[in-house]
Image 1 (tube, rainbow, N blue to C red):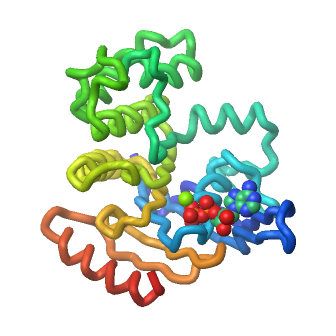
Image 2: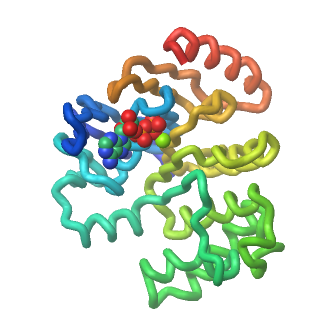
Length: 256
Ligand code: ADP
Ligand code: MG
């Protein structure tokens, strides 16, 4: 269960520079970010401000140029590739704009895949856990369908199930509703709000204020720096509209 004040993840003076351009492109410029356990943190900013790079750098998908990222008391930047892969598999979940599910596997088998890779000897437990997840996110009735036989919203909920299959400490999402229409987007955000309520820490990048309004806290990125922070507290259906309006006004102040 989440403890409101303990730390899930922390980055310290994180930078990322691409040397391939002239002059070199500094995409992250000294990011100090703390994510509390159980928090739903949202990262916003204009296109190109470094949101994806930040998410990839704190989740070990990409190596920062300098700085540290602490998870479970370890600096991820010091891990070798095998340790990093293991940490990503067992401690982190990922949801992207595209579902990246395999076309030759059923929805169920796609969701099972990372859990079986993480613990090949615990198949029965994984199958039970995945069944419970599919019921929780209302896709159990399409478990044996192929990925082209379900809706975009169902597909994205399947990728949320896959991301949760190894019971991660933290879920990272990069524009998880970016390819969806507004009703499917709300479906997926309801699912993520449920994940958050169940106690999972979430870091989500989005450019959609309606999605961002689901978060406990929103940080705003400009040119690779966190330049503003908004802490609206817990989202509810009742305060949803007001939060979205408030957030939109705040975003406009940031030049969004
Ligand atoms: P966002 O997700 O906020 O739209 P990104 O993190 O994807 O932004 O990109 C931030 C900046 O980094 C952009 O200006 C992009 O052009 C630049 N960038 C990303 N990848 C590379 C790369 N491999 N080489 C040079 N510049 C890159
Ligand atoms: Mg991006």
